[in-house]
Image (tube, rainbow, N blue to C red; front, side, top):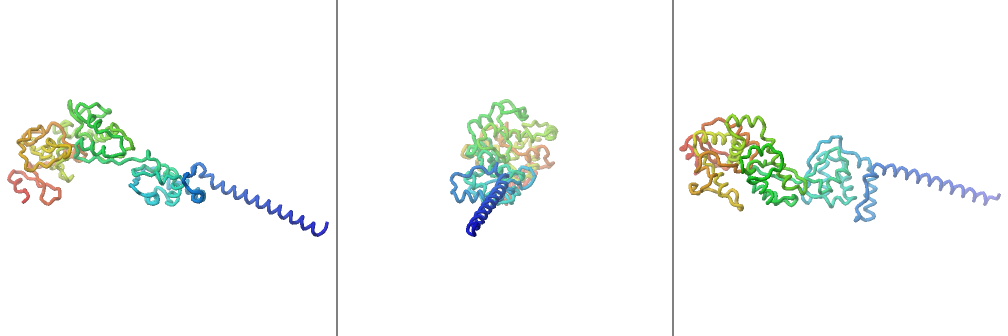
Length: 383
């Protein structure tokens, strides 16, 4: 064998060894890549079809590179948290706030995951229930699922049932019917559940006063009946054995207590004054003096365009209504507004005073000046 032939054999062997080493290296690298891909293989899924080739592969490479972080929750804490996405908020800002809330540890990773799946385009405003022990894919899917969000709805204390209807009807995220609401909360309505409060209603009474005011979270498309059930269930929670005992000491039924609470709800601005206003009402009832509460006249003459019209300057003697506490003795026949716990508690535990009058202070603070005599009451008038 000459020198040239030996060189050819050496070159061929070298090429074979190089090929073998390259193949081994590719196998090793491929195995490592697959090993890194495996933890996210079940959650990475298909990319958004609208992504370009370069962006799609760049995002996939980043997600694969951080596979461990992608599938690792921020903590083991499973305490639910309400997370609010505001209208027009972009994915990057949402991710940053999630980090601040302790729900994720890497804002960029969540942003890229949302982008990879196109979920950044489907996030809608609303409240979402998230937990720190959720992984980034779980949080991303929750944020991108419109059915997972919860719509905050505030029912304000002192509202009439018609005002609640107007507010709920204005929310496009609820499957709400004003007609159904007014029928279900009006006189002689059918029961929507087994709630204790139904036993407290006189024959023919509406649910006015028993629609508990609070901020609620509802799923999109929540029905009118389900909304009503939630408000009634919350009210039932307020009528405790202690409350029943306290009002029983004053020979009040629950319905009568709610009527008084509804008057307090409309009259009081400051919580600390509610028990004092309650004492004025009880003092007047005890001696048969008309309550002379403006809010009852407002309730009597209300119109849909203004449920609480001004009454200053009216001759109350001309308003013939069982709700007009300027011309009737005792309580109006039904609650005039829906009440919260502070007003119910004021009925159960009024302070002991010898006040028979009150009027709003002149400083705009919401406070009232209380007085024992009519002359003192006149002296408290604003200049």
